[in-house]
Image (tube, rainbow, N blue to C red; front, side, top):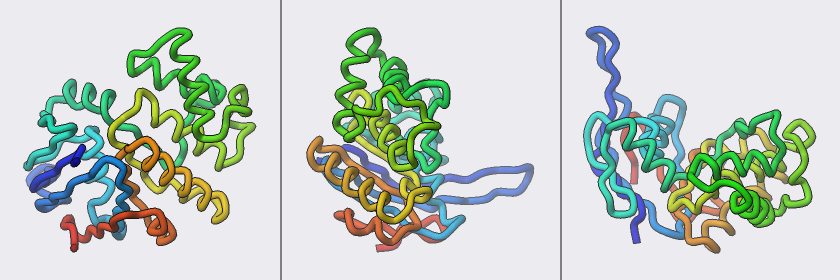
Length: 222
């Protein structure tokens, strides 16, 4: 079942009289339990597409549906859809330096409406799912790059989003740790039936992919 459907997505930016078209009619689906990689050179439109699919940006044209429901362009609607349905994993981890691993995950749960003891219990379960419960009390500065990324993945899983989006998740990791993170991603997508889209320059990410998409000049290639 397609949990995310994009049809004829376009994005154009205007600066004064100058228009720049970044996406030119992109259509794609993501299915539950499927791992898809999106590859393309710098300036190809992959980051803009990721932000539109993740309900950070609204498209200039086209239609986006998540969980069979249309996504509107209003910022308040985008934020609500994002909180309910999307989990993000970033290249730079984006952890709060003053919060320990458990508190970083709890914070994401709080934003999605789960608070108090229930949030703490769920945060512990999420850290356990990514193999990092024994580091729950550690601050980010005391964690390795791979451990930080595991915390980021646990945070992205807060409240069980239908879609996981990862932006260059192995870029700051050495090859051995990167391989472990990729296997964790694939295991979580399959075990928890999540749709996973990974934007990457790293060809090794293909090892976990069910499909590989290429984007060039704002268009997907077969």
